[in-house]
Image 1 (cartoon, rainbow, N blue to C red):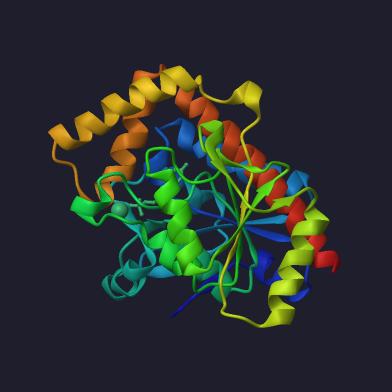
Image 2 (tube, helix red, strand yellow):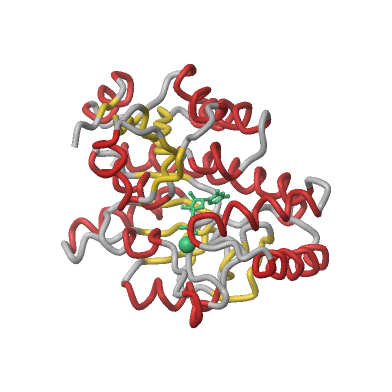
Length: 302
Ligand code: PSU
Ligand code: MN
C-alpha cells in the first residue's frame, strides 16, 4: 500500500524517538463540529508537551497517511463525505481514491506498518449488546489480536456489552492491563464494574511488558493499557445508566445498523446529557494521549 508517512514522523521513528499514533474516526464521526477540530489540535499539542511526536492517521484522496498537517486535519474534521474506515476498508478506499477517517482497527494497522508502536484513543470498539442477534462485534478486536501495538484507551465504549468484550479479548489472546487500577475502566466511567487480571503502574512497567512481548516472540498481538478517566471527571453513573438505556432503545427503534451504530449512540449520549458525556469522553482521551506519550518515551529509552 502507498503509505505516506510525514517527514517528522518518519525521522522520529528512524531515530527511535517517541511517537504516538492518534485515530481520526473520533474526530470525523465521534465528536461534534466545531469542537472536533479544536480537540484534534489539542491532542496533538498534548503529545508534544509530553515530548513525543503525534501521528494522526487517516486516508486522504486514496493515500493512507501517518502524520497529518493542519490543513489535512481540517479536512478530516470538516469535509463532507469523509468515510469511516475500518481496516478492511483500506484497500477499497485506496483504489477508489476516497478519503476517510480511520477507526482503531485501521489506525492500529497503519501505525504498525509505519513502525509506530504506541497508539492512544478514547474507547475501543467491541462486542455490542444484542450480539446474538446482530453479530455486531467491532473489527477492532480481531485486528488487535494480530497486530503488535500498545493501545492506551479508557476501556471499551460503555455502549457495548463490556463483559462479552472482555471475554472476546481473552479468547483472541489480547493482553489487557489496568493502568493504576485493578478495575476495567468504563469509558465515560472510571470503573466498568468488571475486574482486570493485571495492573501496571508506570510507563516503564508498560515498556517492560512491550519488551517481553517482543522477547517471547508469540503471536503478534496487541497490549491494551486500560486507563480510567479520573473519577472527578467521569459521567454521573446514574445519568449514564438512564441515558444509555434510552439510547439503545432509540437505536433499535430507528433500525440503525452496521457502521452507523457507534456514532449514533455516542451522539445520542452527547445530546441527552447536555454535553456531560462529551466532557467525560474528552477527559478520558486527554488522559490517554498523555499517558501514551509517556509510554512512548519509556519505550524509546529502552
Ligand atoms: N472511541 C471514541 N469515539 C469513537 C470511537 C472510539 O471515543 O468515535 C470509534 C473508534 O474509531 C472505534 C470505532 O474504532 O468507534 C468502533 O466502531 P465500530 O463499533 O463500528 O467498529
Ligand atoms: Mn459494528
